[in-house]
Image 1 (cartoon, rainbow, N blue to C red):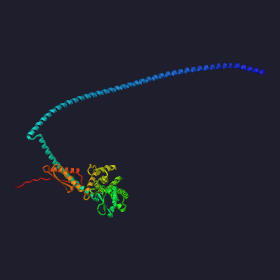
Image 2: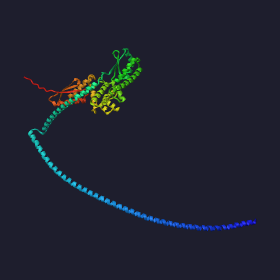
Image 3: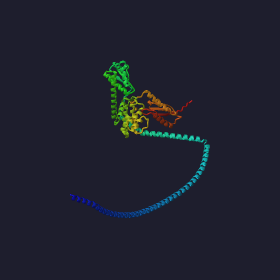
Length: 518
């Protein structure tokens, strides 16, 4: 056992001594190998550095060569551009020099012309002075020979020329009027007669009152009501005056607005038939009558458009056309008159080869302003024009409505035809009636217009205002002056008066010589 322990100890000691020796040998060997590797790496590094330096030198030399080449190329390009610019500058300087030479030449020529003109002007001034002197001498000589001054001679010449021109003007006017009448009368008569023959509208004379018949006189008391409450309610609701007088079995409705009068008439007739007359019932009946009248206006408007062959009208314009049924003008029903004007205008347009549909449309709308002139301010022409513009009617229709009484100039033949149709419808016998006041005012105005002209002695309106006879002073108005005077009077009457049909202006010049035998 002790032997074994001793052997182990010896082995351990031996091992302790041998291991460091072995390790030292290994370390020396490894160190030599590493030094050899480091030497090789340093040699490779020096080789790489030498190669890089050689490459860098080569690149540097190549770059320098390229830079030199680019520099040479840029210098050559710059030289070329400088040569071109110098050449262009030289050419420009040459052109400028030529222009300056030309300008100098022109300036010299202008100076020479100015000198020449100055010499001519001086010469002309001299000649003008000589001519003025000769003219003065000639004028003095003429005044001495004729015995007249210059002003007297001018006045004499102007007077003679004026008389000659006036005479020629009168002759031309007569010839033109005769020629126009010969050419136009036949065709115009044919067109108008044809149009009137095709249109035969009835006319009913209407007034501002309506009469409602009663079943008995005892109904008057029921209409009046206790302390007049029924009649007051009816008048308040309708705006119509009820006249309950001594007329047997009748009540008179009076109002300037025909629509109100119609509403009152329908309401009163229904109340009479119903028999229940009291304020509540009156209000209910009046409201129903109003709706019925609105319905009637719409139906009448549609019927009128159908009769005239007019389509595509705005519904409000259609209702207003129907409202014309309750409107009168000089006793002529406005709706009937509008239908007749529409048909006449359409027939005349057909005869002349114009748009008959447009003419009928303008004719039916020409008096549309009369449907609202009780409710709005302005003439029926202005109101009608505004309505047509509001509801997008064509400019031709708007101008026809605006020009049908001559307030503005017609801009189309359609407008002229509507004017003619309106005059035909209003002027034919039985179509209208005038009040005495309107009739006398028109005749008085006609005589005042004719008497306002110089040389008129007196004038007389005859034939119900369709002719005016003008007596002139023969010493102041010559035969040639009469032609011009008649034309001037006609123009002034056209501009200042409104009348149906035509007015004949008859100028009379009479010279009398009186002597006595003794």
